[in-house]
Image (spheres, rainbow, N blue to C red):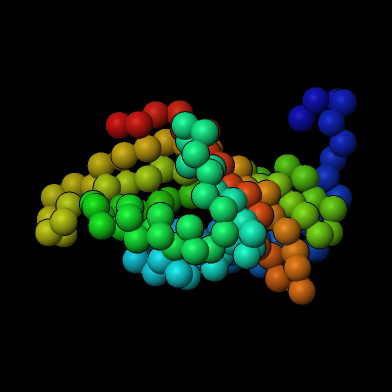
Length: 143
């Protein structure tokens, strides 16, 4: 962090745990085929920037996208520890390195790394619960 950037406000432990759980639910839902559960990780007006200037907004579009990509290969999203870049009590910006692994359809053989990225999630706290307001990923490699 450069000297011109302010340190984020300290994150209370209950918010830290809730944010970690949100990010874990996000990965488990998309990998487990829970399309509506994945979309429910987003705020009702949440946005997912999928690249190429394409953005999905709202849970209906998000769930439809999850169903579309869920019809292909078996994937596992493996995030690294999240880093909170900004926090003010009601919003947070979180980044983590993430590997996306492709698993053999028959459960045999080796998993392969499909993507290396750094997702950035802008989170919002509403009614005492954390939601993804916007998520986008900087992709480092597609393998």
